[in-house]
Amino acid sequence: MKIDFDGVQAFVAVADLGGFNKAAEQLHITQTALTRRIQKLESYLGLKLLDRTTRRMELTVVGRDFLPRARNIVQDMTSAVERLKDMSQSARGNITLACIPSMTSHVLPDIIRCYADQHPDNRIRLLDGSSHEVRESVLSGQAEIGIAIEGERHPNLVETPLFADPLVFICKTPHRLEGRKSVSWADMRDTELIGVSGFMATRIFMDYQLAKRGIRLRSNYEVQHHATAVNLVAAGVGSAILPSSTFNDGDRPGVVKIDLTHPVVRRKVVLLCPKHATLSPAASAFWSLTLSMLKPQQ
Image (cartoon, rainbow, N blue to C red; front, side, top):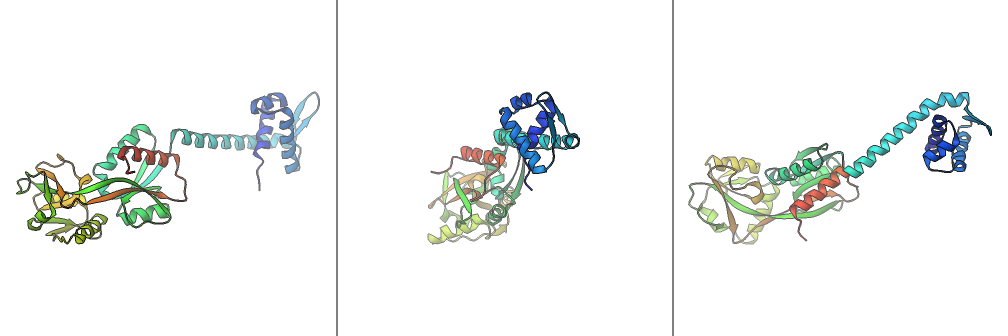
């Protein structure tokens, strides 16, 4: 059933303002156009809502009974449209973001703080998981936006590069390598390493890059998450090779970060969204802010 909203709106305006002239002015249309709208509504209903003569206008019995419901229809529609317009202009709303855990150490909190300053009424629901899980969340519609490691392209996803994140060496002082500005992968062979699970995108990427150069490392310990590796390094259990974005100097007393070279291995962080879906105003604002803060590659 098609609702003739224009006709209902015209009827309410005439009834509330007591005449066609004032109603036409309020709706910014001519009296002729207003009359046509009401006639069309009455024709659709098969009922007379207004009795009009050259001297006066009165609601019929049916019109008086319909008026409260018609007001509700107009008020509900007006409120709904105003809310949508407000969402568009102020980017109000809630978003769900899927993100790899390594971004939650420093990168994502900075973005969220800035976003909260700009949109204090918005809420963010965060789904943290592996790059594969992030992609699945965006593809399934559980999340509007995702942040993951660059991988095999999916035809239904838009992937926008954010930044290249180099792998670094993290150790607790004192350590035989702590005074260096950089270390090579060859230096890792004699170091007790805490490795991140081979199922993590970063580990898969690292092993692939090193295998191409004939370098193979053995971990004394293996964990599931970067944060766990940092905790073990801080406890003096061993050292770790992690993405630079997961750790800043000063995060943990006595723990230092050293550049890894020969070769420099970088993972690429990407921003994801569905290819054939329009982002909500709130998610679109988050997308734009993320791009502006992380200076994507050209």
